[in-house]
Length: 113
Length: 114
Image 1 (cartoon, rainbow over the protein chains, first blue to last red):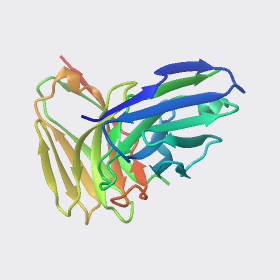
Image 2: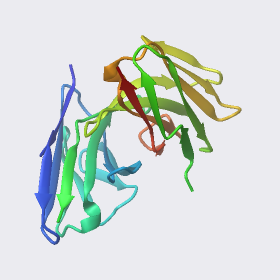
Image 3: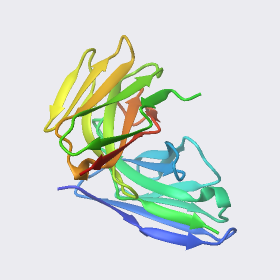
Image 4: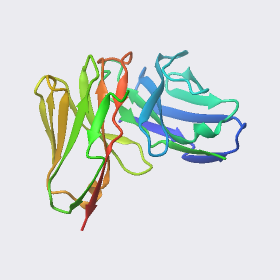
């Protein structure tokens, strides 16, 4: 069975500090990977997607970057956090051959102070 | 401009009652529509996906319909349970591949009381 794991579960960070959020998918090779962001009480927005190792496409940047260093790993990061980065970050995956099937991780909650 | 509108914004029902959630959208093309359940502070869990014109799906106490002509979907929850308390999110995909965009509604917050 496939599993998706996000880390950290929650984090409080200072404005201007760096951030790294991770996502790992086990049990599925070459998944499509996605990052989504949800402001508190807001609507989910797609940030990035990746269909293969080393390739990441940006949908909405929000002064964030993403990388896929391994087939099963997707990293979201920034060198300098802004207050507006606070929210809930969700990683998701879909099988390569099916773009309308989507599985979400449990999310990482970020509070920037 | 919001392309996926959900109503009502929030809803309170008593345990055991049925409820209906609405989703209207303007996304074009509309390849598929999916309903998700999101518990507070948690990830999204897929309830059902609708693909074809006039699709109807059923997943236990959840059933959904899609009218692509009207660009409208409904999610029915029968015999609600306390655990159904959550936000229900309607998502429209413009393609059936990773290259497509997903358009999210703001969700309907359902509260089930004893």
